[in-house]
Amino acid sequence: MVETDYYELLQVERTADPSTIKSAYRKLAMECHPDRNGGCTEAEKKFKALSEAYECLKDPQKRAAYDRFGHAAFRTGNGHAGAQDFGSFADIFDNIFGEFMNAGQGGARRGNVRRGSDLRYDLEVRLEDAFAGREVELNVDTTALCEPCEGSGAKPGTSARACATCGGRGQVRARQGFFVVEQTCPSCRGVGETIADPCPSCRGEGRVEKRKTLTVNIPAGVDEGTRIRLAGEGEAGIRGGPPGDLYIFVHLARHPIFQREGTTLFARCPVSFTTAALGGCIQVPGLDKQLHEITIPAGIQSGKQLRQRGAGMPVLNGRGHGDMVIEIQVETPTKLSAKQRELLQAFRETETGDECPNSKGFFQKLKTALRA
Image (cartoon, rainbow, N blue to C red; front, side, top):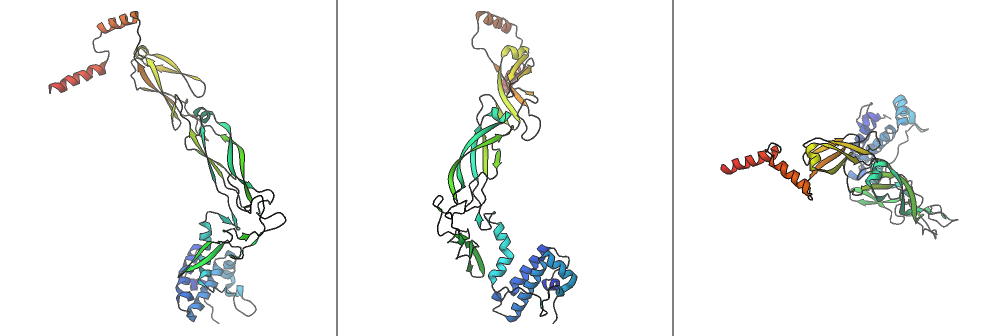
């Protein structure tokens, strides 16, 4: 009997990687599957040969043995290699796409158990706490493992049985024309087991509702929308499945003085018009509980920003701090004593217009515009 080389049968090079071999097998198997060729005997023989070749080459150990000894590596006592019989299109569909379909479920079914849902908790923190970091206690309503049945869902002293509908797979197949579609088993809801005598505490779920108190460390530098993950603190899985995770979303409370952009703190600071005109120094308390001295240059105008290096927010999970930016707001006095009014009147009588170049330039431009 002449045996065809597996690589030649699949039309691939001997150095082909697993993905190339799989792609070639899928294409050829689709073309010659008996269900697509009206039960043709030749097509069925070729299909079985392709399946035998793929079963060998997809396994690293079998492939290594075949590369070294050829077909002789798998001969049985009657001189034939052990071929796997793919009797229906559902088998090839599962062989080609099974891993992809299971991965697409996001790990919801592993060993016929279902992972618990993730939970979200929105936490509002003060800007001061975001600056320094702190520990907070959270009360979270969730589900926990049922202790009497230890998460099995079955009454203590009894056990669950494999689902008769799906055979313990958690999935049932429905054929729709040429394709075979897998769906969640309606009897066991994808768990793969049925319980004749459920646990009275959890009613067969393997989990019960519970309020948990958790201590969470809020690191220094958190910002609006920062997400903190607590692994395994979500809902318990059904019937002993692994728990989900708890995600804490941080929201910053409004601060009466500072506004935040990244690691930079912004604040508007009013100064007297005399300080703005003559210059001076002001002290601004920071979130680090230190007084930061800001030098005001003479002649500063409203809206001018002065930067204090290293007085801003800390870098999350890093080193250093951002800056604190002070925006100057020149304040005009509204209550003057007689002496102050007299001094201001004397100042106005000595004005030449050069003291306020912006005002002088504005009115000159306005007069030019009106003459045009």
